[in-house]
Structures are given as C-alpha cells and as structure tokens.
Image: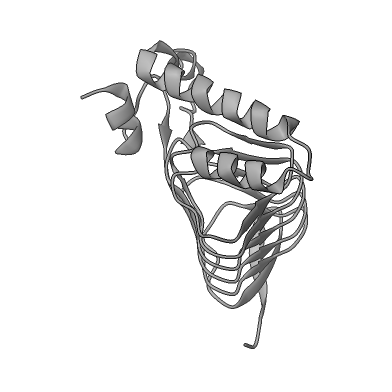
Length: 186
C-alpha cells in the first residue's frame, strides 16, 4: 500500500518520505501561491483556480486571500460557501463542508495527528482523521477545528473557539475547549 493510500485510509504514513505526496503538496502550494497572488478583481480566474485546488465545489463559492492547504483534493465544499482571509486547511484526511457555510477570518482546520511520544513523533510518522461540517454553519474568527470533529447543521462556533469534540446540530458553541452553550431555534 502506498503512503498516499495509507493517508487516505487514516493509517499511519510518512508524508515527507513519499515522492507522490511530496509532488501533491508542491502542486497545491504552487496553486495556492498563484491564487493568493491574483487581484480580487480577477474573480473569474480566482474561481477557476480554487476549483482546481478543491476536490469538489458547488457553483457559488468565495475564498478570500490568503488561503493555504496541504493537498486540496481532500477538501469538498457545498453551495454558497465563503471563507474569509487567512484560512488554513490541513487536509491530510477529508474536510467536508455542507451548503451555506461561512468561515470567519484566521480560521484553521487540522486533520493530521502526530504521535504523543517524542521518539515516534521524531520519525515524522502521522495519521489523519476527517473533519465534517454540516449545512448552514457559521464559524467566527480565529476558530480552530481539530481532527475527527463533526459539526452539525445550523451550528454557530464562536470566535476564538478550539473545537476538539463533535458539536451537535442547532447549537451555539464557544470556548477553549469549545462547548455547546445554547440551542439555536430554527
């Protein structure tokens, strides 16, 4: 099994020793550099480029510069998707966003998991767990979402939150660690 297959399957893999994964990362980093260099007035070119970066998109999406990711092809977004400035998505596993998702500035979504013990960690082995975001979700600024998290439909994640566990649908959740504090009536 290739390192890429191991990564996709959520198994331990070695990203720095694998030629295919290195090529994939360099490709998307070059695309992100190009995307971030385009003027905001070049809307058509920006949309075409972000659709090359992401694995799947809806028709109506907007991603403000600067945007960075690891592979791109593991990112899937629905309709009416918006990312504000300075977003980082480390997509070693799938990162899926539903329809009508709004992401505030300086948000990060991390799928990689590194070993806790230093000796193993220093071998640069890692694995990844997916992040799944439902429909109609709003992230305030400076939110961090960690590996393996699912966020339900209609949730609101307050600014500065660090999401370490699943957040149910229809909840306002805030804090570090992020916790549901109030149900949102729909």
